[in-house]
Length: 431
Image (cartoon, one colour):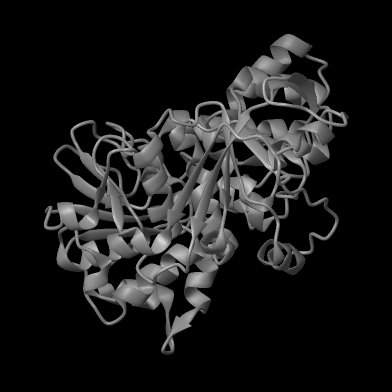
């Protein structure tokens, strides 16, 4: 009986020949990531349980990114960053990326990829549910609570149950009007927000192979929206090229065996998928853009770990080139590297940043910003009565700010098209 890619990686981390779904195993953790929301309580638990003379198991394997509530005057949010800064200084941490310095990177999930922490075949845990983003690199990555993270911080180990795997195959050539966001919304509509609870979501097929690394990260990022423990895509030439460009060359490649056992399998023909949205108030409340077309908007938002990557802005800029937005539209790069690319990349000699500014968009600093609501002075935050279309990953009541706002989730193409008209619009109108 063969193994899935997830089972193979977990077997390696457990120092076993093989594991199967349902096994309980000790894992050696390769990277622990935390940020300004969950970092301070993780540190507090670690100090309490391991004592004031506690030692970090491996400082090189601990990565800290302030990114969630940072561009704010909120004293509680500022205090969280102060705690991280003090902790990093006290323990001389090499992988602390402080806000207000040249080291600041932006949203943790994108920065992990850009800074070379996403290494195929390894195991990465983070105090954030969207840590599963890193699985696009053929590795096991998942989110944990602060107590589990504190245990990893002190021991480098964690006790886990091996998940069952689900396989999602996307056949055919990706049409120009579809993005990875449409693919994951299709899945969520089919299996719902608990359809993959504590399971591995494995993505494959011709359409997946054609996606860039950033687009693949959209798929694995939203595995958690289906309740998934992890999302994962096997390493191929696209992965290797990305890693070579940032100097990551030492890694082990795992692929699922042909006779691997899956909980379930789903197969799609991408030529039959339309541009999709998730209507309020759940990521699985799927509908076609066509069915909700004309819904009046108060805000459009292109940003977050899901929708603030350079590929997302390329999609949007191509639609917005030479046009004007008719509703308040926010552009929030997920990382400082992406922000720089907006200035450097051009369409017909015009930078992406200039395209957005000339279209009337508001460009914000790289961070999570309104994706997690944030303090009242957070840019892009929803207020009572707002109807927002966004490239973010969740639209639960209050997720982007006000519980009295309505948030539609969509691809960057759909959000850009909607920004031009001021109401939800099928991007095919402009393509």
